[in-house]
Length: 227
Image (cartoon, rainbow, N blue to C red; front, side, top):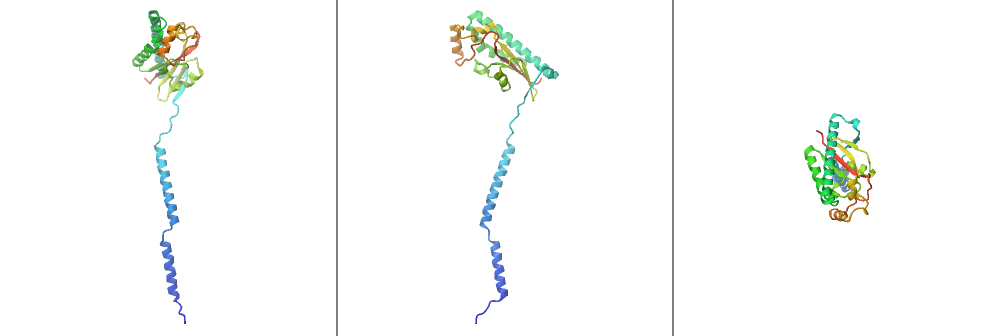
């Protein structure tokens, strides 16, 4: 005679088995949780890095006109014009004196040595920054500031004014080829051998020849911080 197991005991074994299965860790779930946690952590780090990375700065220079300038900016513009006039005057007188003393080749030294010194003196005197630039450079250090890029590209012949968000005013003043300039910047066939030799020695990558009288040579540019 086969003895049957008590239904109560069978029910208890089944319940124990179910509880044991419920307590066992699900490997697939663990893998999913680990991956999810890893991705979440990576996203968190990524967000933290993104939030700590500064956003790219927007262009801060805005084109303006004389009639839009307030009283402070008008005073800055007057200072810019004064500095330009002083640099132009000293540069011209130095150029003519050098030509008289050393001949046309002496003019090359004025632009390479004296002009940067004049700019530094004016910067210190007026508390601003002044320079020269062109679309055909002779001196590689005369590259234009970034806000002038489109002016150089379009060879703009008018003066242009800008205001920076920090209150700095910038201005450009065109430079046209005058008779003394033709000695060093005219047609290569008309430039003397001594001048060509001096240019080649001082500026091996020179681009600044081939101009005609009255042509746009480049610009004076001035940046005047808020006073």
